[in-house]
Length: 627
Image (cartoon, rainbow, N blue to C red; front, side):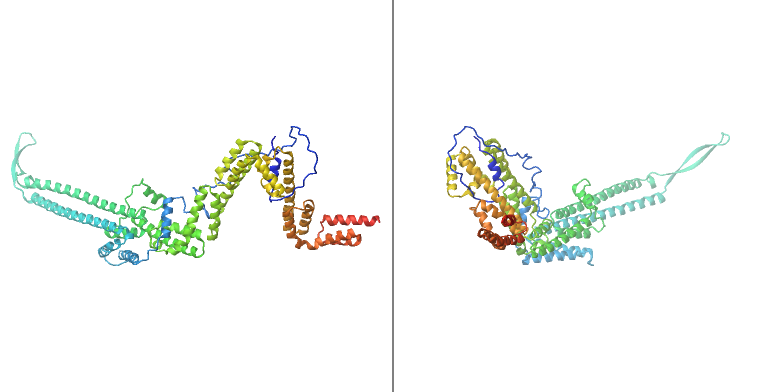
C-alpha cells in the first residue's frame, strides 16, 4: 500500500515550523479490510525543459568572467595574463636610484634627438647614440637600447658603404667623360685620308670623268684602334655604373628594412619610448623624407594600419601611435589613483589592468606605489575566486565571495553572479524536492534522474547530503517509526513536519500514525496561513484585524508556541482593542448588557470590521429586545 502524496504536497507550502496535534477519541480499531481507501492525489508533473534551458538565467563565465559592471574581469580567463598582473600588484615600485637614472637617461636621449632642438643632425645623432649604452646598463631595459644602438651602427655602416659606392660611380662617370672627350677630339682632328677615283657617265653616255674621294686612313681618326677601344671602355663604364647604382639602392632598402623590423619589434613589445627614440634616429640617419614602411600588403600588420586604423603605414604613424599609447596609459593611471581614493575598487582594478596590458614597461606603470596596488589585490584575488567558484559550480563559495566583494568595493555589481547563483541553486533544490516525491511514490528511476540533474546544477548542494541521509534512514523503517513516536511523545510536532519525507514511507502502512501525520500537516498549514495573513494586514496598518485573525486560530490551537509568540509580540499594540473586547465579554457574563454593549461599540469603533464586536452587538441587541 503506497503512502498518499497529499501530505507532501501540503508540506511544500509550509513557511514555518509548527506543532499542533489533537489525539482522536479512543475507539475500537476497525478490522483491516485489506484495501487502501485513501484518495491519492498525483503531483502535477512540471515539464522539464532541460537544466540549462530558457527557464533559468544561464550564465557562462568563460565568455565574460563575472562581468562585474558589464563584464571585464581580469577578462578572458587568460591564466598567463592573470598571473603576470597579480605578480605586478605585489612588486615594489621602481623608485630606486638606478630606475630614476634610467628614466632620466631616456628623457635625455629623447630631448637630444628632438626635432625641435636646433643642433645639426649629425651632432644630435652622435650625442644621443653615445647615451644608449648608459640606458642599456639598467636591467629593466632588457638590453633593448643595445639592440637599437646596433641597428643604428649597422645602418650607418650601410650608409657609409653607399657613400663609397657613389664616389666610385662619380669617378667612373668622370673617366667616361674623359674618354668621350678624347674620342670627340680624335674624330675632329686626326684626319689623315687617302684619295680614290670613281667613273661617271655623261649625258650622251659616251664620255668618262675621274673624281677624287677622301677616306680615313687605317690607324687614324675614327678608324683607329684607340677610338674603338675608347668606345668599348665607355660602354663598360656605363654598365659598371648601372650595376653599382642598383646595388646602392638595394643596400639602402635593406638597411631601412632591417631598421624598421626592430621598430616593429619594439612596438609589439610595448616599448613605446624605444619606438619614439628609434623613429627620431631614423629621421636623422635617412634625411630623404622617405618614411614609408616596407610591409607586405597582404600581411596582418598592413591590415592593422590600413583597415583597422585607417592610416598609411609610415615611420611617423608608429611614432604617433606610440605617443598616443603613452598618453592613454598615463590617463589610465590617473583614473586608477582617483578610483582607489573613492574606494571603487572594481573600476580601479579594470583601469589598472587595461593600462598594464598596454604599457607594462611604461614609467607611469612601473613607478606606481605598491601600497596603492595592494589595495586592489584583495579585490582581484576575490574576483578570481568568484570566477573559479562559478566555473566549478560551487555556489556556496560563490555566494560567500559576492558578499565579501560587495563589502570591499562600493562599485561592485554582482547582478550576473547573483543571478547564476540563485538560478542554479533553485534548479538543484527543485530537482531534490522532485526526487523526494518520486522516492515516496516508489519511482526510483525518476528519483535518480532528478538527483542527477540536481548534482549537475550544484554538485555541492548541502541538501544532497540530506537526501543521502534520508535514503539511509529510509532503509530502517523501525528507527524512523521510533523517532516518529518519540517526537509525538515530546509534543515536538514541528520536527515531525520537518521530517515528513522521512516519516511518510515509514508510517505508510500504519493507519494510526498516518492519521496523526495528516492531522499535524493540515493543522500546521492552517496556523501558518493565518500567520501569513495577519502579517500582511499588520504591514498595512490593520493590527486589530491581524490580532482578531490570530485570536480565532488561537481558540482552535491554543498550544502552538509560534502563534502564541506572535500574539505576545502584538499584544502591546492592540491593548486598547483587546481590553474593550474582554470588558464586553466580562460585563455580558455578569448580566450588565448595557455596559457590555457599550464596550462592544467601543471595540467596533476601534476596528469597524471586527466580526467579534459585530456578533456581540447583534447578540446583545437581540437579548435586550426579547426582554
